[in-house]
Image (cartoon, rainbow, N blue to C red; front, top):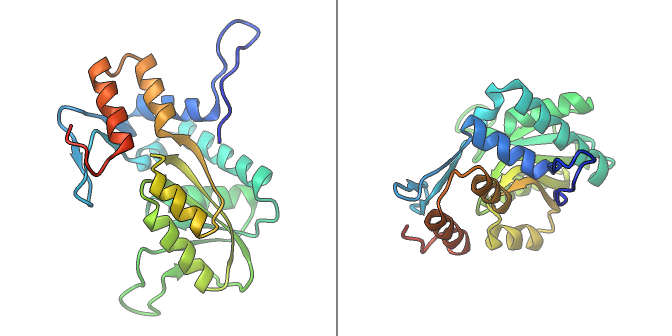
Length: 223
């Protein structure tokens, strides 16, 4: 996880990786906050936040920064990685960029087996025992990430870990990964993003209280 920010020699506060990504996401519209008119997730949950990491791919500086930080996590925490896998669909592009930077094989995991042809769920060269790191754009409940990891495991890969660019930090995701014994790292998280939104005066005190309430109990949040 990202370290706490420190102070630079000039008196300007150095930003952690998480803070830099939070600032980028807010500035280019990857993350949208709306307490008064919440978004509806596919699960039916009402949410005051919407995150679309695919937008970051249209911004070369942001895209490249994220790629470099994902590469750094792999080099520091998952030494011996032999392949990179992206979680479809949002994890595919960034995963491919990371695999290219590391000169490693790339594959991706569908949410369900293809309905025709070879009916693959894992797309790419299957190498038994190959050590793979899974790249995810966003982790919410963790279900899609855990499902992708299970598919790789069934295909014979050794799961080194999962890295996301952003996570809401829900307890159920942490518990799911812990139970599945999947090491998990995220470059940025909800708490850091909300703190950055406060510093940029993007949300009011009332909205902050509501955003914090949603984070604690998203299924029961009413706005």
